[in-house]
Image 1: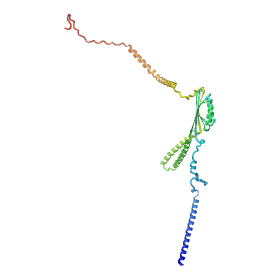
Image 2: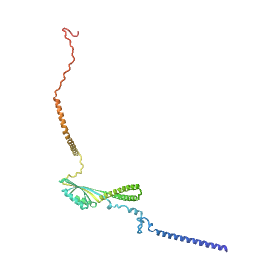
Image 3: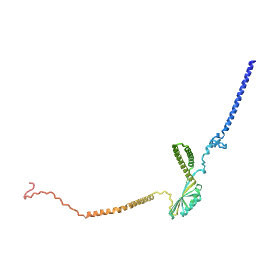
Image 4: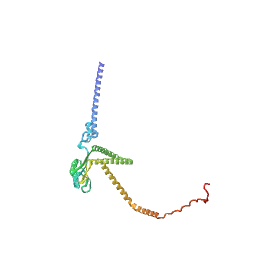
Length: 326
């Protein structure tokens, strides 16, 4: 009986100990959760992830698919959103060049543009006027059509250049360069030595110069895309027509040779005119001196030298009756 009672008391004590251990584990877990909750509450907004809005909104891009985030910053490359540079040139024959030039300038200014250049030559029937007009890109086609109505259109050329990729590349480079300039300025504000100060100032100046160059390119590109350029040549009724045919043969060679001959004669006469004063100043007196010297030599009598005596020949007197050969 005593052994049985001891075993029962041992079992009861073991069960009680197990229950106490389980109860202690449950209390520890609940206390840990409670402590974690209190710690999170104590940290408050400082523990919020970077980029989260103070109003409690999720950070930009949270919960969005990967392709959604990648396409969010992609440029809009639709046809109506592309950057196009329009340029055109045309030749129009008109009755009155001055009046047509005034009408062309009025067309450009009415469309919201301006005159970029105005060159005029002569004033008769062969007068010409070369105008450079800058008009908004949206009204480029309409202005070209109106200019053609000023007279007889003899020549026209329209060119377009897509600079969308260049514009996007410039925008990205400008953004990066601005960030580099800001970093250099922050480092400059923290410089503690003269050497670091000078080095950072030089680096900041270089980065600011690069940024200014990129921004100038962007402004130039924006100007070309916003305002199109039209070069119109207005000619009078007596102006020589444009001959687009390819000339070849004897007449072309003769015309070229005649031009070369006239050019050569012009050069030769120019050189002769340049040396003529020197010839008159020095050549005439020298020529007169030479002529007088020659006349004096011709008038001087020629001196005849006496003939030199020859060697004497000895001759023997002839003997009468003598025969030769004895």
